[in-house]
Length: 74
Image 1: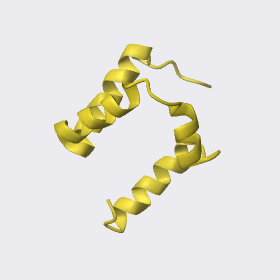
Image 2: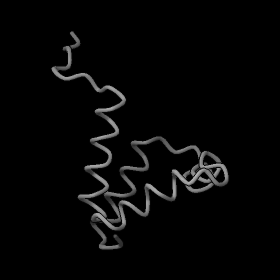
Image 3: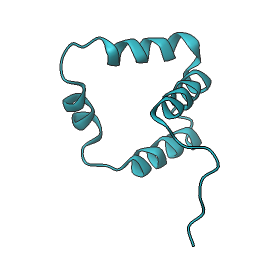
C-alpha cells in the first residue's frame, strides 16, 4: 500500500530544496553562478542539458555524481 507524503513536493518546495543542495554542494558563489547560467535566457538550456546528459535518467545522473565524489573527482 502506498503511503501519503506528509509534506507535498510543490514546485516551490522542490526549487527551495534544489537551491539548498546547490549551496551545500557548491558553496554560495558557485551556486549563484550556476543559477545565473541557467536563467540567462541565452541559448537553449534543454539542448545543452541533453548534450551533456543524453537520455540518462535523474537517478543515473545522481549515481554518476556519487561515483565521481567517491573517486574524489568532484
